[in-house]
Structure formats: structure tokens, C-alpha cells
Image (cartoon, rainbow, N blue to C red; front, side, top):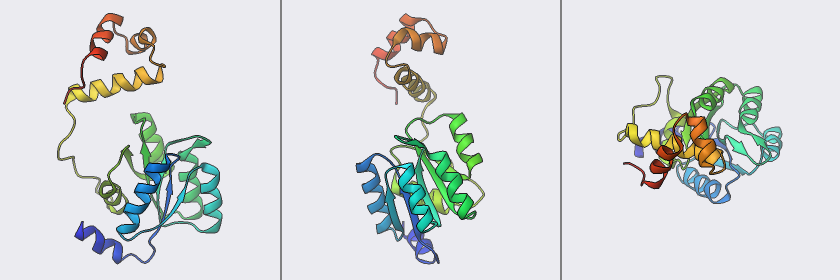
Length: 184
């Protein structure tokens, strides 16, 4: 973290917008990023974020994808409209490839799953164009499959039949998978 703190200390503008409707996460992330040298402004909704942009355009932003009053992609676009060089990281608890592509097209420099570690957020905000380093301990293929099944199951309102239909698998097979613990 010392290297990151030195980089942050050398920044001319340390302004940071944190947009998340999950209050405990927003507060923890705001405190953690402030302790690392950023000057955060914490907001809970798209409307609050757009109002904060009218006052001051941040150099950095951490934006949640799904919010109660809208979508974080519009905020990313609004940030880049007033400050094109701003570095924005998108956070989401509902990660998928399509939304990651949409976030990058809107101007986000990275896309992180929740709950995100503050050091990972800082690395993403300060990363250069060469892309992020591969993870030290990536999820196994079984774990990725399990997470995908759980996400679809959640999106289907915990309806096993609908989830099985969308995943193109037999309902009983899905029930056996759901009854097991998550793989490591």
C-alpha cells in the first residue's frame, strides 16, 4: 500500500465521487479511500450524483451499477461529459459480460464485483492502460459456474423451474446443484 499512497500523494487533484445506495458499503469505502489520501464525496443516488457533478467534477469516481433511482452508467457518462479525463471504476453485485462491456463503453476504466477491497479499487483507479494484473487466486471453473447459477436463480426470484429453463438444464439437476455447498 505504500507505493499506492505515494502515487496518491503526488496527485494534483484527489477529488473522488463514491456513488452507492448501500450505506454501510459507501461509508466504509469512503473512509478507506480517504485514509489512503483521496478527498471523497459520498452520494447515495443518481440524483445526488448529478447534483454533485454540477458543483464539482471529480478526478476519480467509484460508481455502483444498479441503484434504486436508476443506472450508474448514466452517471459515468455524465462524469465524462464534464471531465473527460476522469477515471471511473464501476462496482456491481450483478456482474456479467454485457454490463462490463457497457460500463467500459460508457467510460469506466475497470469493472469490479462487490464487495470490493479498497486496495483493489485504488489499483483500478490508478492503473495505467496496460490492464489489470491477473488475480493471485482466481476462482475455479466450478466456482464460476456455481456463481452464475446462483445469480440466474436470484434473478428468477428463486424459481427453480424458470431458472432451469433459462440455463437449459433439467430441473432436478439444478435442484441437486442448489442443494450443495459452493465449490472453492
